[in-house]
Length: 294
Image (cartoon, rainbow, N blue to C red; front, side, top):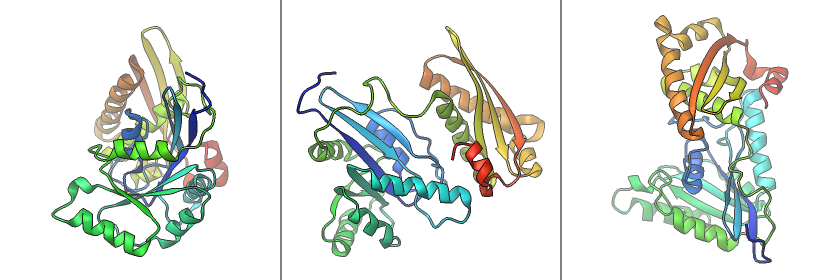
């Protein structure tokens, strides 16, 4: 990496309510799938960095959980990540979906009070009909005249090049924060656990995804294969039965889908073993949350 006095680096933190497309945007800007996604709210639980390094800049994108009113300990931990993202941002990307209305003025005000420029992103404009995107931009501009608003579609990567150019204009001059070959601050075990958790969100309904946590207990890399063991925790015995499914068909499907994604990410064959265990009411227990890395 060329070190020059004009080198730029900073933290660009993505915040917003659940399901507005924050993780999809992180993946689009990185050009690689790092963060898991699903159509269900609260898929993202941790704060995750995506580190984009080029010759003259390093952007540390930060994906955060969707902002909500916490109902239990896990959600309190998740909202702590959001507050931290407001505190340490060099640039804030505040995302809303095309259909959203002004249901979270407190969060917008918190972003505006932070010591960082805010880019307000109106996402999912690829679904716009007629003048809907234009009208929605005006709606937000009338409510918040000082906002810098950009229309994007993170899913279709529409407007993301323009967004990246604007970020580079605002990014401060600073040395790189991370080595140039790092893509994320998270470990390989974390990435694998998140991939499995994504498949749970995609394959199960109701409370199952929200009651599940995944821990990778073994990650052994050989020349041509990576051998991984993972434990899936749920809160009740009845949920364990649902996760496993009839003749273990459900858990096999999760394992197969997760293994394919892991092979694409690591570029190696994957041998994956999963085990389902019960950790009663883990979402409400401070000690158990700490054990799971929250």
